[in-house]
Length: 334
Image (cartoon, rainbow, N blue to C red; front, side):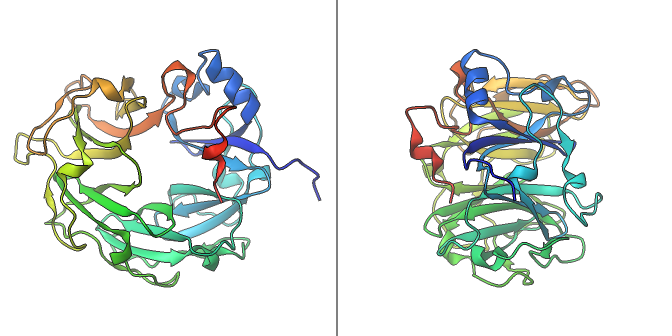
């Protein structure tokens, strides 16, 4: 058995599936000196997609589009003190299917904690909540985490205490906000209930767990973006079509991503051609639901925005609230 101190580390996952962990003291040193967290943006056809804090004695739950959950001990993630690419996450997960894309990774210190849920959302707007304790017995090869209908797939998974609100946004520019308590609590094999009604081939573009005073950032395929106050979206019952979040029509490109952002956040906007643009959240105007937004990135003919993810915050502050030495309040990660 490995004798390693139980401490906080930063774990990163790239779009190409490369994962690594960085000791917290090295992370703070790098961002404090104004250096990038990692060189992911420098690797051709790859970029940093996820960044989160984990405990070295804890677990990472990796959820796939096909509804599987794989268990990875944080200590099994290779440590890196430099801007290396890391190791393929699929090589660390026994029995993982490389064709079944990982869509979410969640750090958990105690898998048996009570009164917490995993919230699942599919591309077609189907949702469910499952008690975290149903994932308290890690298995080699993973476990079935959610049923998935043919032609659908898990789009995102979030951890929750069950007391907040959820907002869903669709590619066609619709948004719905409702209490999390309206989503049924069911077992691992269940598919769930309708969170949002979608027309035709529309799909969900983002799920926001509303817990803080923030704005909703929406970015479309053609590089237009805007921030909208959460209060602009009325609280409704789940299952409806919601309200307009962006104008729709032949001249309006679909929504690619929706993020809950604070003023100090920065985001990375990635195009299909591999261009990566960083933008400060507060440089994006706060506008109403019926406005199309303003240009965040120039998209060349034949190219399109494919991904928007949080980047390192300004002044060395990471956008996902990595704690500083004087702020231990952010370390409560179960």
